[in-house]
Image 1 (tube, helix red, strand yellow):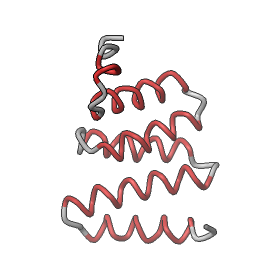
Image 2: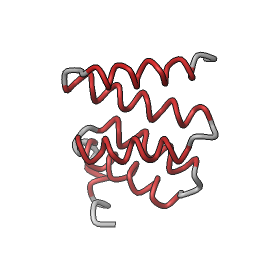
Image 3: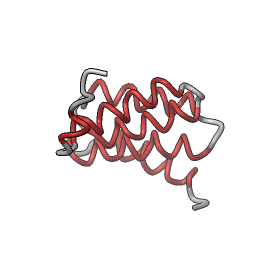
Length: 102
């Protein structure tokens, strides 16, 4: 902790320089997450994570960090919707699958 501002600069530079897809996804998630951790940058976090979600809609880590940002913005229903959808989509628990339509 304490190196978040440096992390933002590092992630932004890495993204600008170009990365392979797998690393690019992680760099964007890191950037969005770091903005959220900084506290006063929730909207910037939302912007980054929303954009990367459009680019990589099936990448679950971005979904989870997006939900954390939405929660930080007091958008609780949207945050929980994302978390619950990801839980239902990834669990093998048959009991939870009964609630897929809720």
